[in-house]
Image (tube, rainbow over all chains, first blue to last red; front, side, top):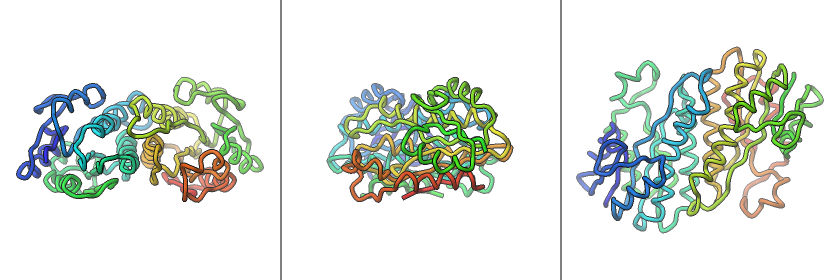
Length: 199
Length: 199
């Protein structure tokens, strides 16, 4: 398969590349690095990325920003960051890609454990992650030509604990290499509309 | 209790008013009707509404628009309708209200069954509804002064079947009066962070 990975230089993206590259052709993309550059929040940029990528059998997204902050001080503009970038950015990959992927191709997006299990300062992530899962369940029943879509919801990465542990006390972490297996399950399996939780 | 109902003139809003008005003082609000007028998507408008409403013990929202359309033709701008109005509109009620409600007060928002069970043309609703539930779970752990927050997720209303039945084949409908009981459970109960499904 020809597989496009957006966010390929992130901790998850590198692990997914490592998992899939022995069996498939990987094309890397990202905001600041990768073979192709893309601003996911801009549909025209996403369309240009697809035009440059050529025929694809799978799209994996491990990209998207959200704002973290106290609910008491959160602003609508801060919620927009997660909605425009992590949510609609990944949605844009589907809106444009549904017309371009090879028959039977797949989209694998990324949400996160905060969608179902909140932490303090995480309301922007909880909102965007849950929204992604609702979108994926819905898009799965409308995609044509055998296209599939799933979303991976990872717990906090073991690699992120040095920075993020104080916010995730009591959460079991998962190494990115283990999280990457869920992306393999989505890309190389046959399910659609699933939320693959890695906890 | 002094209870503000936004969307008070809608099918759900009228049923919630009918359920609660025998025991509480109701203040009605809406975009085009009600004692107070508000554009939920505009935080300044929400703040003006609260200033006019005076002290409140509970806020109920049964308001918010989403766009319905085929995934193959959906645009980012059409997803924005649900995100800015139904999602961030209701979130604005919480952002402003968390500083104004009386101690122990509550927010009760409205999502909908499409957040978990999709229909064709419903991806905008699935996204916004699921996002609301993620937000409510998260906001519940950060609200102070004993403030609570829940969300009601109703199935298709029996009153809406004449118009919407073709999109909801096989779904059990619920009359608005039955849906209104879930709002009573949220406002007059003591839970927080719950999704009250009425199916």
